[in-house]
Length: 138
Image 1: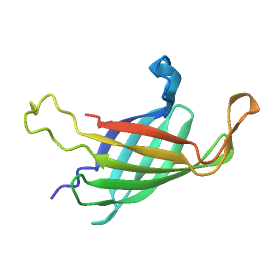
Image 2: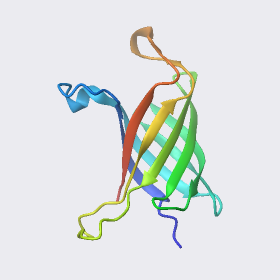
Image 3: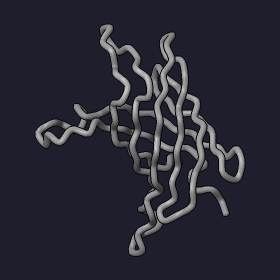
Image 4: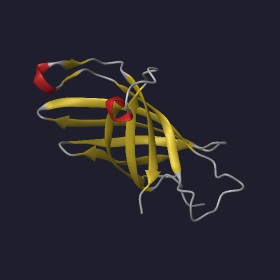
């Protein structure tokens, strides 16, 4: 069986804010590209990154309905360590979908594991949680 997580994904995450009046762009937490490779029958690695940042991913996946993936992303960005944890589920294929229109997707949650500084010297605290989705690219 081919591992459905292996490949390139377009990633976006959003702050979990219930204020319906906020524009979607105001909720954006992060965006970038995920590249996943298979290390073994249960382990995955890869990268996640965008302009100005990149993290190395190490993690695993589990079979089930839906399948699950879990990563920790680590890297040095602008001279300081960033660590994020990700958990996601492969969205099941709809039985009445048109194969050419349904793009594989992962939905999940990400947490900032350690604090890091932000623009203007502000601190981005640990423990901030956002929701994410990733769609297969190409």
